[in-house]
Length: 143
Image (tube, rainbow, N blue to C red; front, side, top):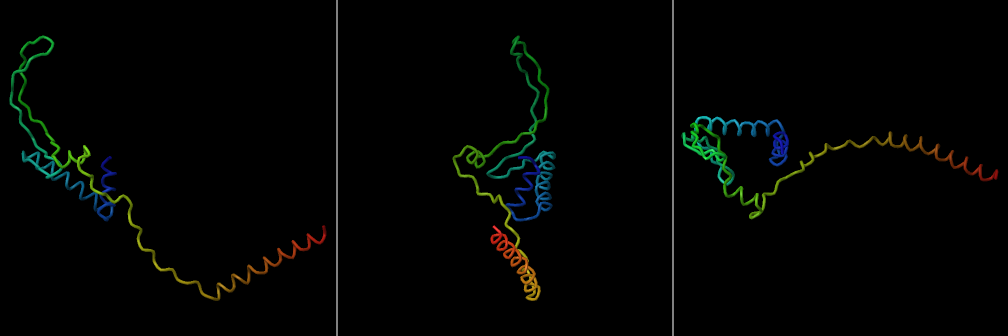
């Protein structure tokens, strides 16, 4: 699922327009990114934990030669799936039900056609049908 599809799904599920859903989804992502950039841990319970981790310098070994190699200190982004997410993803718990079809808007009431217009329409159609019948009868008599 891409970001646009996520926005559309959120809009349908929460019964809001796509523009509002886009603001909500993008705003949530922006808040998470800003807080993680500051070094804070963002924990959305039952879903995931987002963190910025500082790894210290260390000594490692080259697997081919066995020679010791120095690894520099670095900062990494870490996202950890939490238990609630894992349970649903692995099928231990049932997934939440999501609305996938937008409810149709109530149709505006249609105005009834004026009776005079309806009578005129039937009067115009009646002669055409009668003419067709007489043509068919005449054709049968000729045979």
